[in-house]
Image (cartoon, rainbow over all chains, first blue to last red; front, side):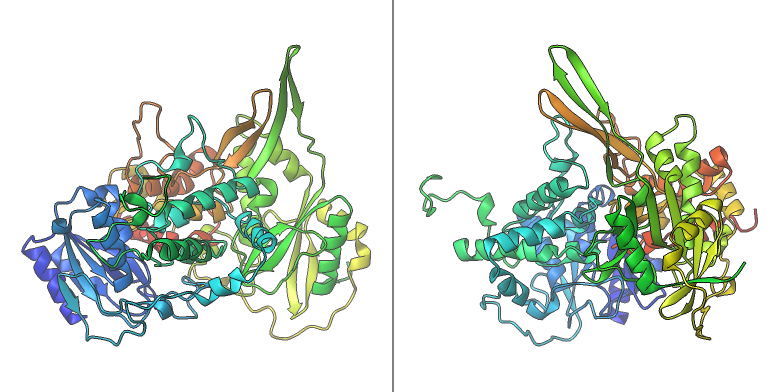
Length: 287
Length: 341
C-alpha cells in the first residue's frame, strides 16, 4: 500500500499523469473506484481483496478521455481489458501509466456488493500483471498456466442441457432483465459512442423490459462481446437481478476459442478474430 | 378491537388464492439468490424471510412496461382500443419505505396531467406492508421523517411477532375491508416470540437535515462537489430502476405497418441519452450532471412542486450500484457542505 501511495503521489506531483484511477475505502470493509487528481489525495488509495471493480471501464469515459495522461491501478484481469482497448484503438498505450497489482483473487464470499454466480478468480491466468509500467506486490504463483485451455464448470454443466432446455433457461433468465444497462456501463469493452439500443430512428432493439426486449438486448450484447470479452465478470456482478451473464459470454468465448484458438486480452499483438480479415480464413464465404 | 394475526403459510396461501381468482397479486419471491416483488402465480416460490427486496413495490403500480393502447389502421381509418384498468391489485411484501413512495408518486401522476394508469391501479390496490426487522448502513428512512415501522401509504401493516407470523394492523377502510373479506386466512392468536420487534426508530439514526440539503442544492447548481460525489458513476440506471420513487418513463410503439401497441416504459435520467436532443446537443453531457439531476430532482425540485422529498431512504440505489455510488454519502456530503450556512 505504501508503495502504491508513494508512486501515485510522485506521478501526480511531477505531473506525469493528470489523474489516477484507483480504489479507496468505503468505510464498510468494501472498496470503491476513485479518481484521484491531487497528490495530497493519493493517501486515500487502497488495494485489497475487495477491489473487484474493473477500473479499465473509466478509461473510455468522456471526461477521462480528455485527460492527457492517466494512471490506473490494475489487476491482471483489468489489464486484459486495457490490452483490448489498446488493440481496438480506444486508448493510446503512451497515454496510460499502468500500476499493475499482483493479486490473489478478489470477490470473497459474503460481500453483498459482489455476489457472483460463477467463479471469476479460480480460472485466472494473470495473477501477475502481464502488461504494466510498474508492478507492485510480491510475485504470486499462477494457478492456471497460460497455455491451458479453460472451461468453466458452469458452462460444462449448462452444455448438458438439451436445446429446448437451454432456450427455456434463457427465456426465464432474460425476461427478468430490467434493462438498466448496468452490464453495459460496467463493461470495459462496451464503449460504443452510441450503443445500438440507444438508436431510435429506427429502433433496432426493443427498449422494453419484457421477454422480447430482454432477450434482444442481452443476445446482441453477448454477440458483440464474442472474442472481446475478457472474463472480468463485472456485468454479472453488477446485475441487480442476478442474471448469469457470464454463462452467456463464456458460451461465445468457448466458440471463439474452438474456432480461432483465441483468448482476448493477453497479447498486445494479437487481433480479435472477428475484427480481422485473413486470406487464409478457413471459411470460404469470406475469402 | 381484538388482535388479529397472520402466518407466513396463510399469507402464501392467500396470495396464491388471490392470483387464481383474477386478482393481480404481488408478493416476494426468492429467485436465484435474491428476493424480488413480482406477480404471483400458482408455483411462485413465495418467501418472507428477507431483509429487503432488490426491487421495490413500484412495479405493481408503475410496471416496467405497460400497454396503454393498441391500434389498427385500415381503409376506414384508425381504430384505437383502450386498455381495461379494472383489475384489483394486492401488494404484499414491501417495507414502510416502499409504501411511503406511493403517496409521493401519486402527487406526480395526479398533478397537471392525470395519469389514469397509475391512479387507477392505485385506487384498485390494497397495500400490505411488512414492518422492518433489520436495517443496514445504507438505510436512512428516519432522516426523511419515515420509520422502519411506519404506516404511510399502507392499508395494512404486518408486524412480526414470531419467526412465522405477524400481528395485523389495519390502517385504512380498504385494509379493514380486505381483512374482513379474507377473514378465513387470519387468526385470533399466535404465540409471540420475545425477540420481536427487533428494530426501532433509534436503530436507524437520523443522519442529515433534508431542509439544509435543499438549501445547499438550490444555491450550488454549479459546484465542484457534484463531480466529487459522482466521480465514479458510470451512468447506468440500476439506481433509478430499483428506486421506489423514480418515475420517469418513455413511450414507444411496437408496431407493424397496420397495427401496433403503444407502451409506457421505464426510463432514467442517469442514462446518457435521456436528454439527448434531436440536434445531438446534450444538456447533461457528463456523468456527474446526470447524477446531480437525480439528487436535485429528489431533494429540491420535488420539494418545490409538492412540498415533499422524493426519497424514502430505502437505500436500494446504494445497494444496487456496482460503482458504489452511495446516496446517503452523497446527501451527507451536501449536508456537511451546507454546514455553517
